[in-house]
Image 1 (cartoon, rainbow, N blue to C red):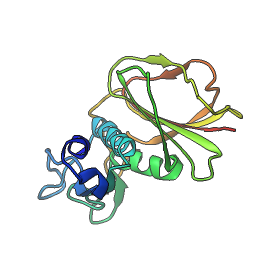
Image 2 (cartoon, rainbow, N blue to C red):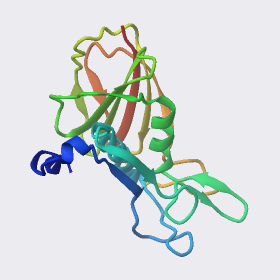
Image 3 (cartoon, one colour):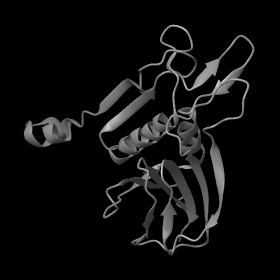
Length: 204
């Protein structure tokens, strides 16, 4: 779409954007009835990476509707007596609660990591999301051009070393959002394997 804007005369001026009516994974095993997909830790990473891609292209993506919310391919599953959050719910919840709405350009990162950043609407916080879909630990540093860190960052992580870990009714969540200790982002940052990490740091 972005290439078409540059090659088709008049298209860029019309500012025609992309609206995705549905996006999600849809594959087996169907353990919750017809098409009732069970999602795993690896799928949580995929949803987070999908969000990053939409954020990076928010100038041309007008709308992207996650499908669907409850049962079948939903991030909320139900039984006759219980409801629970599937693994894919976790990044949706985390980014909705904590991630910013003003996209920030990210460059020069380790290509093994999927990175996205945004300022909060009041511009008081920079939020940074990392997806590490490998089995390796990575260290990285931040160079915040035009921004000064004004304190330690709050952080949250979604991780499980077993990429096939999943949530189910009647037992503790195997894939969940876990708060991190306050983190100094002015030095090296460690990103664990098989993880989705979000930092929220005050800036000036």
